[in-house]
Length: 87
Image (cartoon, rainbow, N blue to C red; front, side, top):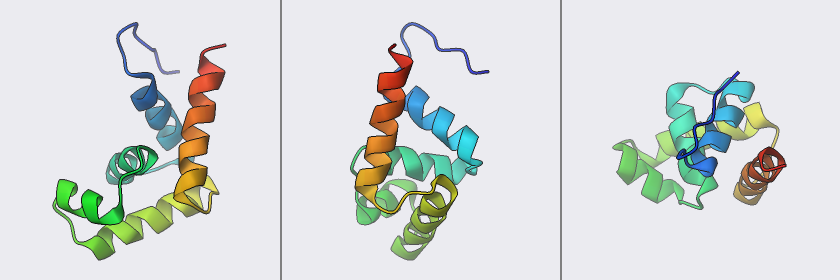
Protein backbone atom coordinates (compact mmCIF):
# COMPACT_ATOMS: atom_id res chain seq x y z
CA UNK A 1 0.00 0.00 0.00
CA UNK A 2 1.31 3.43 -0.91
CA UNK A 3 1.33 6.13 1.73
CA UNK A 4 0.24 9.56 0.56
CA UNK A 5 1.87 12.44 2.36
CA UNK A 6 0.07 15.71 2.91
CA UNK A 7 2.29 17.80 0.57
CA UNK A 8 2.53 15.21 -2.19
CA UNK A 9 1.26 16.11 -5.65
CA UNK A 10 -2.02 14.19 -6.16
CA UNK A 11 -1.34 13.92 -9.91
CA UNK A 12 2.07 12.32 -9.33
CA UNK A 13 0.60 9.94 -6.72
CA UNK A 14 -2.21 8.90 -9.10
CA UNK A 15 0.29 8.27 -11.89
CA UNK A 16 2.53 6.22 -9.60
CA UNK A 17 -0.41 4.12 -8.38
CA UNK A 18 -1.66 3.44 -11.91
CA UNK A 19 1.87 2.58 -13.07
CA UNK A 20 2.30 0.13 -10.18
CA UNK A 21 -1.04 -1.53 -10.81
CA UNK A 22 -0.41 -1.84 -14.55
CA UNK A 23 3.09 -3.23 -14.05
CA UNK A 24 4.80 -0.42 -15.93
CA UNK A 25 8.58 -0.26 -15.96
CA UNK A 26 10.25 2.76 -14.37
CA UNK A 27 10.77 4.35 -17.79
CA UNK A 28 7.19 3.62 -18.86
CA UNK A 29 6.03 5.25 -15.62
CA UNK A 30 8.01 8.38 -16.51
CA UNK A 31 6.44 8.46 -19.96
CA UNK A 32 2.99 7.78 -18.48
CA UNK A 33 3.31 10.80 -16.18
CA UNK A 34 4.30 13.07 -19.05
CA UNK A 35 1.54 11.74 -21.31
CA UNK A 36 -1.01 12.21 -18.55
CA UNK A 37 -0.08 15.87 -18.44
CA UNK A 38 -0.79 16.18 -22.16
CA UNK A 39 2.80 16.14 -23.39
CA UNK A 40 3.50 15.08 -26.96
CA UNK A 41 5.72 12.21 -28.04
CA UNK A 42 8.16 14.77 -29.46
CA UNK A 43 8.34 16.62 -26.13
CA UNK A 44 8.77 13.36 -24.21
CA UNK A 45 11.58 12.26 -26.51
CA UNK A 46 13.47 15.51 -25.95
CA UNK A 47 12.79 15.60 -22.20
CA UNK A 48 13.97 12.01 -21.64
CA UNK A 49 16.76 12.11 -24.25
CA UNK A 50 15.30 9.23 -26.27
CA UNK A 51 14.28 8.96 -29.90
CA UNK A 52 10.70 9.74 -30.91
CA UNK A 53 10.32 6.11 -32.03
CA UNK A 54 11.36 4.91 -28.58
CA UNK A 55 8.85 7.28 -27.00
CA UNK A 56 6.15 5.92 -29.35
CA UNK A 57 7.09 2.39 -28.36
CA UNK A 58 6.73 3.23 -24.68
CA UNK A 59 3.39 4.86 -25.42
CA UNK A 60 2.08 1.76 -27.19
CA UNK A 61 3.25 -0.44 -24.33
CA UNK A 62 1.59 1.84 -21.77
CA UNK A 63 -1.69 1.81 -23.70
CA UNK A 64 -1.64 -1.99 -23.87
CA UNK A 65 -0.78 -2.47 -20.19
CA UNK A 66 -3.42 0.01 -19.00
CA UNK A 67 -6.08 -1.11 -21.52
CA UNK A 68 -6.56 2.37 -22.96
CA UNK A 69 -6.59 3.59 -26.55
CA UNK A 70 -5.73 7.29 -26.52
CA UNK A 71 -3.97 10.04 -24.64
CA UNK A 72 -7.38 11.39 -23.62
CA UNK A 73 -8.24 7.99 -22.10
CA UNK A 74 -4.95 8.17 -20.18
CA UNK A 75 -5.72 11.66 -18.87
CA UNK A 76 -9.27 10.59 -17.94
CA UNK A 77 -7.91 7.55 -16.10
CA UNK A 78 -5.56 9.74 -14.09
CA UNK A 79 -8.24 12.33 -13.30
CA UNK A 80 -10.64 9.57 -12.21
CA UNK A 81 -7.98 8.15 -9.87
CA UNK A 82 -7.46 11.56 -8.29
CA UNK A 83 -11.22 12.10 -7.86
CA UNK A 84 -11.61 8.65 -6.28
CA UNK A 85 -8.79 9.33 -3.82
CA UNK A 86 -10.42 12.56 -2.68
CA UNK A 87 -13.52 10.77 -1.43
